[in-house]
Length: 87
Image (cartoon, rainbow, N blue to C red; front, side):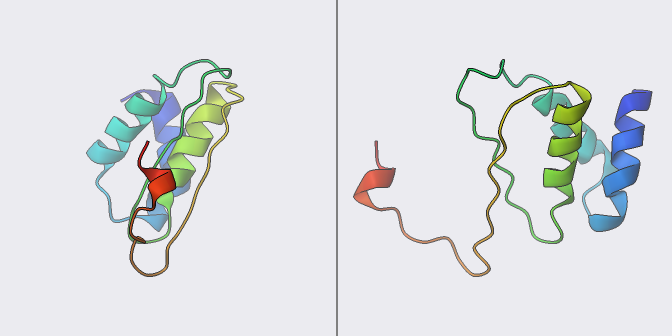
């Protein structure tokens, strides 16, 4: 695992129960996010304190990406899809 990952992981590790290996897989996946003008939504649903989202954000900062991240929390269950959600 790269030193860059370890620095980012150290910032997030106290906020997750996700294994280091899975966090590294997420780190690697985020590195494949397209250039800023592409529309991409990084979706990370997790129970806990959003360390995966932290890891995604810190990774994009490391890459000097201007990609936007949209985070949400339902606090309960996911709502049923509406007609707008079915494209």
